[in-house]
Image 1 (tube, rainbow, N blue to C red):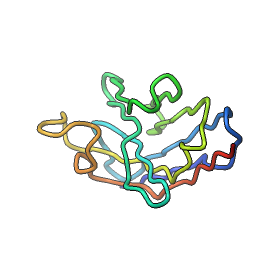
Image 2 (tube, rainbow, N blue to C red; image 1 turned 120 degrees about the vertical axis):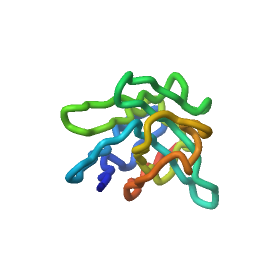
Image 3 (cartoon, helix red, strand yellow; image 1 turned 135 degrees about the vertical axis):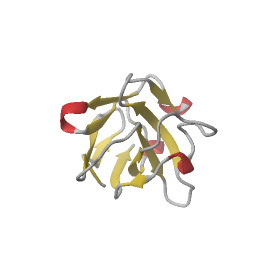
Image 4 (cartoon, rainbow, N blue to C red; image 1 turned 30 degrees about the horizontal axis):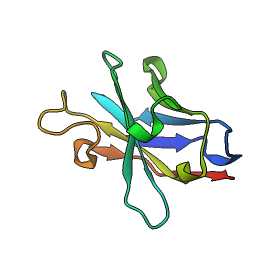
Length: 127
């Protein structure tokens, strides 16, 4: 399974970007996809997640109302629409996939919930 993240770039505060994460592989099948980010000098943190089946979404408090996660099942692609960007949103953004059904004992915000990770895409927001 391969996850290819794209769409990062540089934008001024208040601007928008849309990240994409395309999943591929011979027998790709996953329960959910998530986005995490890691700012310089900080630990990686949860941003948003979505289940493939019901399209249930989850967000970090810091992005509620500004970011929207969505999926296109036909394309095996998940998107992260980021609006009203702030300098503190600057980070490398990673997408991840959970192959096992249900969240079980962990929730979508835990890194250990995910089985596959893509390479990061850098988002830089200037003030």
